[in-house]
Image 1 (cartoon, one colour):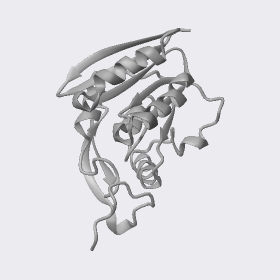
Image 2 (tube, one colour):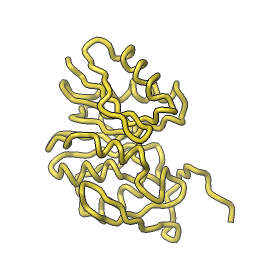
Image 3 (tube, helix red, strand yellow):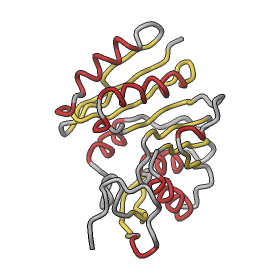
Image 4 (cartoon, helix red, strand yellow):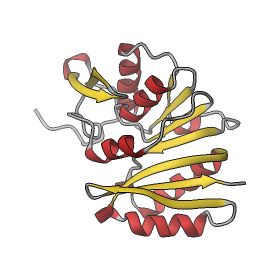
Length: 203
């Protein structure tokens, strides 16, 4: 059988689903994943570094997981902030289908799984957690961040995990230049070859 493309867009059929034990929000749970999405066999190291570094999410408001994959970040947000509205955004329908399945498995009713254009224009975010898709290329990544970071509420922070050898330092410099006035860009931590960057909307 030919291997599927690394990022398959159509939802996986039932036979392709696999059940994987993971630890999210301090709990041992089982999730469903499939080939054709990022890191289908475990919580990838970058996401784990992010989840270990970020403070607890706001209890309410709108929380964004940008580039959700099968859902480790969105599910963590949903588990930790059951009264908040979590937006799991991805361009991959297979990934979104898996997030839906996993939210249902975990009894989460506060996770919205949507394509980027399906987030209402008036929604503003109390926090953004993201392991952004660095490999889409610099121009596309910059466009992605220009689109979503301005949707933070005043005082809110985006937490981004980026592998050091995939351009974390250059991305931090770009963020500092692009979001100069009314923003604070910093580095919250470094672990296992990853940098956790922060972008806070001050005004």
